[in-house]
Image (cartoon, rainbow, N blue to C red; front, side, top):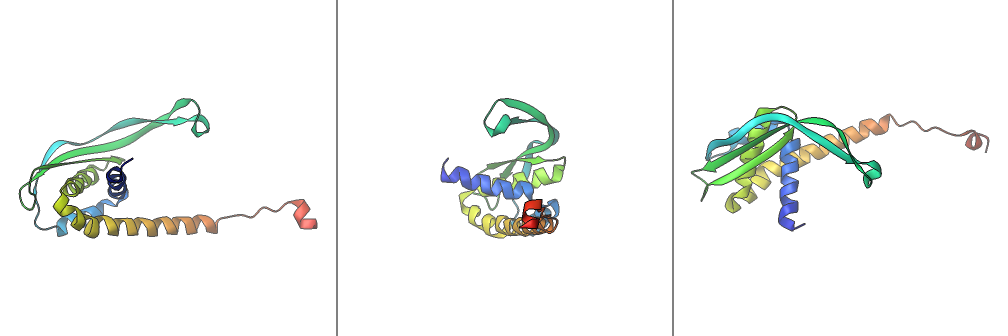
Amino acid sequence: MTDETQQRQRWMRALALAETDALAAAWSDWTPKPEVDAIRGPEAGLVMVRSRIDAGGAKFNLGEATVTRATVRLHGEPLGADVLGTSYVLGTDLEHARLAAIFDGLLADAELRGRVLTEVVAPLERSQAERDAARRADAKATLVDFFTVSREHA
């Protein structure tokens, strides 16, 4: 995998896992805003989730998941040329998919990428890391240490 692919996966993960309110706040603060045209969606649908037995064996259908996708075209100031943004988000939040696609489009513009990474993606990643740490702490608080009879009598 190339570095560019890994970078895009990182920022798309941050956008897909973000709270819709956080994306909406970032978009409302963004100036100047380019014009946004919907190319596809946002639209919700189902995808089949597949898995492998023992993570490497035969594939099987695990079940279905709802996914919302959107593709937008951004044009006008501050972009140098038209860009496309696309997103796929678990669930049925149409606005979340639309906003994630908008920021993906802004990230496609080389001149705006640094600003979007600094002002939008980095705060989202920090917020997600804090949420993950809180979830891990909650899970660790419920840890039960089962002891065996042999340890009890040792």
